[in-house]
Image 1 (cartoon, helix red, strand yellow):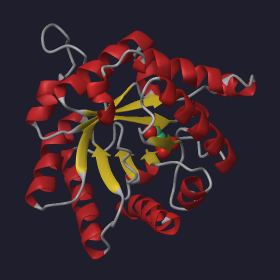
Image 2 (cartoon, protein in one colour):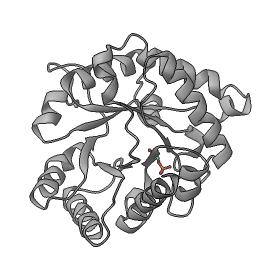
Image 3 (cartoon, helix red, strand yellow):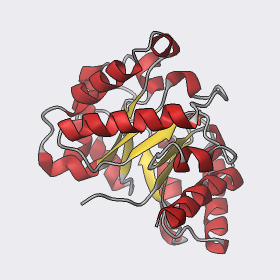
Image 4 (cartoon, helix red, strand yellow):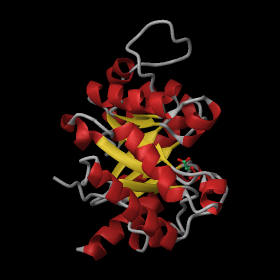
Length: 260
Ligand code: PGA
């Protein structure tokens, strides 16, 4: 069954210590109490060291959001200094994980093979996985973005056991738009959403939600969701302030109302 609810994920990256993270979680909780999101599913992805604290306040204060990790190792345990496994995350109440964010791919040598293994480890453990894909500026300038994204999707998803398909979300994040203030315009987003959905249908994932990410903010969210036809967003910078994060969620909620 297709999940038509919009999804907004805040990727806090390497920002906020656990005190600051709890504070932001609580602020989000207060704003959601005043103005609940009616349709939009909300997830936040704090740094590893904040996960336990954020998961605890989400639980104790009944804040209607889920908690994601920004990365996970594909192995169960062992000699992987600095890494964290799926079972460790699950014990903390984490239910989602980002897989293959472009910063992990570019800065920490996460290649397509590791992305595919990690994705499998995540879904096998029961976590919901957000597979991140997207092209660099040179690829876009050469007009090769569709082929690039198709390759990333297929190398991660080909042959995935059908039992796990409902746990997968895709986030299209053009690298040139991440943290740069340069957003893909609604037409570029719409074209890529269509392309990603076409490729997903070929790997038996026709119903997966497809998010857009890259300099999403309170001002551009409405047009990216309405005209760009994204199923929601993966938000970096603008998720670090409760007000802008909630404005993005509200834009998704309003669009859902309009579409019905
Ligand atoms: P940004 O980051 O919103 O700050 O561009 C998005 C992301 O990297 O997930």
